[in-house]
Structure formats: structure tokens, C-alpha cells
Length: 165
Image (cartoon, rainbow, N blue to C red; front, side, top):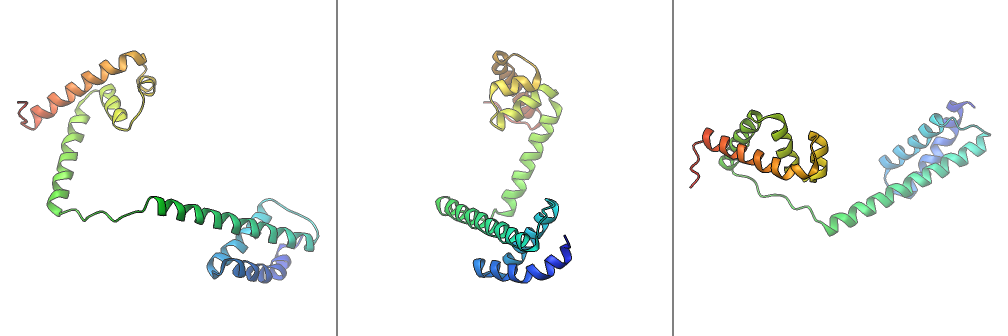
């Protein structure tokens, strides 16, 4: 198969077809090119007319899949609209960054197991998952977490002059 000849003969029609289906020149160009890339990588062979049909079929599927993904994305955005967050005041951002740094310092001072358990807890891992990560029995995770949290609190309060009362 002479890919260059096939490209020169089939691409213009394939592009027009894709453009008419999508109404977007850039999308049409991407889809037509992707069809040829798939032809090349999959080493599809056959008569030029059969290959041309294969390219159109692949392009049709790509456009359909893209339209389906776009519709799903639109449906999800309508159900869960993204609203811009209120701009954070510079002093609040600085305070938040300082607080995060203080927490990071204290976490870095804990032993590895305590740090892992606290971070995994924060990320919503189950006790079973935490137990596997630190190689302990799942029944002991609650106690280990309580101790780690206590050590974290004591260290944080000591370092940053926080009154416990």
C-alpha cells in the first residue's frame, strides 16, 4: 500500500466529510489525521477503495465518540456547575500558607509511621488500607492514629505556643 498516494487521494474528501459532520475545521482536521494515524499504526491493508471506506468508518466513530463525550461533559457541567471561587485576600492567602508550613514542619518531625497514618487518614483511606501501608493489624490502626494525632497536637502546641485551655 502506498500511504502517500492514499493520503493524497482520500484526505481531501475525508476532511470535507468530517468538516460537514462537525462544523469545525480544526476538529475535522484532527479527526481526519487521527484516522490516517490509526490506519498506519494498525497496519491495515487492502485495496484503496476498501481503505478509503475504512478511513471514513473510523472518522465517523471518532466523531460520534467525541460528540458523546462532549454531551456527557455538558450534562455533568449543567448538573454540577463550576462557579468561580471568590478571590482570596492576600493576607488570608499568606496566613493559610504559613499555617500549612507550620503543619508541614510538625509532620516532618513525626516518625514515618505516624506521618503516613495521619496523611492517609486525611485522604480518606480505610483502616484496612492504612494497616496494609504500615504493615500492622487493622484492629490496631485506631489506637495508632489516636497516638499519632496526640503526638502531632503536642508537638504543634509546643512549637507554636498554643494554649490547650
